[in-house]
Amino acid sequence: MNPLSIQHVSKTYKTPKKEDLLAVDDVSLVIAPGSIHGLLGPNGAGKSTLISLIAGINTPTHGSITLFGLDVIKNPEAAKGLIGVVPQEVVVEMAFTVQEVLYYFSGMYGVPQAQRQARIDQALDDLQLTEKKHEKAKNLSGGMKRRLMIAKAILHQPKLLILDEPTAGVDVALRQKIWELVRRLNASGTTILFTTHYLEEAEQLCDAITLVNHGKVIKEGKLKDIQQEFSKNIIHFELFNKSVSHPSDVVATGSEFEFPMTNLAQDMNMITTHYGDNLKNIRSEAASLEQIFLTLTK
Amino acid sequence: MSISLPQTGMWALYAREVKRFQKLWMDTIFNPIVSIGLYLAVFGVVAGDRVIHGVPYLAFIYIGLLSMNLINASISNPAFALIISKNLGTIIDLQLAPISPWRVGLAYALAALTRGVITLFVGVLLTAWFIPLGGIAHPFLLLLAIALTGIQFGIVGVAFGMWAKNFEALTFLTTFVLQPMIFLAGVFYPIDSLPSPWNIISQFNPLHHNVNLLRFAVTDYADGNPWRSLIIVITLLVAATVAMHYIVKKKLRAE
Ligand SMILES: Nc1ncnc2c1ncn2[C@@H]1O[C@H](COP(=O)(O)OP(=O)(O)OP(=O)(O)O)[C@@H](O)[C@H]1O
Ligand SMILES: [Mg+2]
Image 1 (cartoon, each protein chain N blue to C red):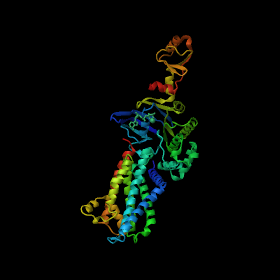
Image 2 (tube, rainbow over the protein chains, first blue to last red):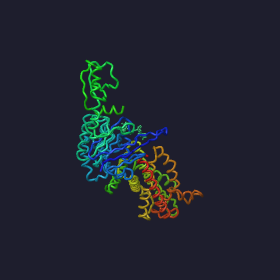
Image 3 (cartoon, helix red, strand yellow):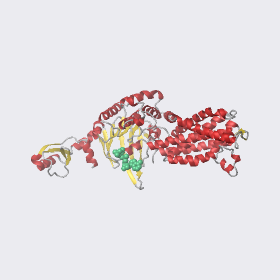
């Protein structure tokens, strides 16, 4: 049973001017059990909207979504119980402490009272919030609040964990901690779907990615396959003197330049002829996710 | 896919909402008691030893005031909590959790009833000694009437809190709708003492039947048939529950 199956899902919002805004446009997507799946795309691509549809807090205009075979619209409570969601927007209770937030929220997911405390302590430890256990949630720092949101989502041991930019606003060391936790959860059988704007994180973690832009899926599959497909298509080179004229389609990426090729020999030849002695080195290698992302969302 | 899962969830949500008002115990306990005390002091002085239909006037309005408190607490507790949570965005917890909409509403309504009962209990403890009550005529009916009234207005509070966009709407409800209805429900006087057509119109005030039932349970005096009031209260509870379910369902999932 696939943790998530999305069939031809669209979502139209009404703008204040009563125009239609197609935030998700005929998206189909299947996530395999046990995978770590990255949902990537620029701001406004429709990632969070798609997640809200999966989480059953928003209704698709068209299409159907099933979680472990359960239809989210027809069987919302059973479906919701199987997933954990870390929303992009950080929100906190004003009245409650960290401990109380976790205690009641896990209860709302049906975690029996007797098991709650052990799970809370484990999650607090995993997310380095133990010291803040009795602090009011509203008094946490921004990054701590986000970690609290993650803790809330894992207490009921969901079979599919969905994280919408879980590391935004979290410092480097703790980001590593969060991904360690995600890896550990995945190793123990939790399927992961997440979004991030840190593409190197996605590159390190994902088995598969789905790239969306303007509400549409523009690329999806195993990260390795996609990288391979792209690596054949990019020539990297360095120049001694960068302020010279370039053939069209050459892109500067820091100290390097890139050229999307169609034929290896021909294009290598063209570049060596064009730059002559100015060429420091030239090679074709695996494209980074960042390059793929920029190429596809251009 | 255990069927019992949402139930645990509902009770956890109930416990959370009880915890929320427990943190505001000054507000929960003392506000209503101070207001009851003030009303009693004023009316006690004015009314003296008057007796209405065999019931001492002070006892008559005492029950009315306690009913008014129960109704107020039951409506405003969930309405406040829900409007705040919509403003903060924490409403997403209710949207994500695997609890069906009517159970979400019921959890809030039961918390409202709990708050109402605690207020009532403390209020009675602190004030009953100077009220010439002379016992409770129908204790079981009293418990039933308290439970029905607390849940009924708790559910109204849930529906309103889910529907209302801001506190202005809540102020409007309490000031322009609830307060007049409470005052015209026969809290301070028997409605048969009203001139026509107000005595008839008051019969159509749903709150009148809650107050009437509660007062009958304590004093054995009723404005009109108390059993009719009981049936009306139950009918309105069912109607409010259906409306609440519809509103909560609509609000917890965006269209
Ligand atoms: N509730 C809403 N009402 C109207 N329009 C909305 C609503 N939510 C999102 N949108 C619009 O839908 C589009 C997609 O938004 P969404 O939040 O899904 O993007 P995203 O991919 O998550 O972006 P980001 O990376 O910035 O989080 C945007 O144009 C946004 O303005
Ligand atoms: Mg987003």
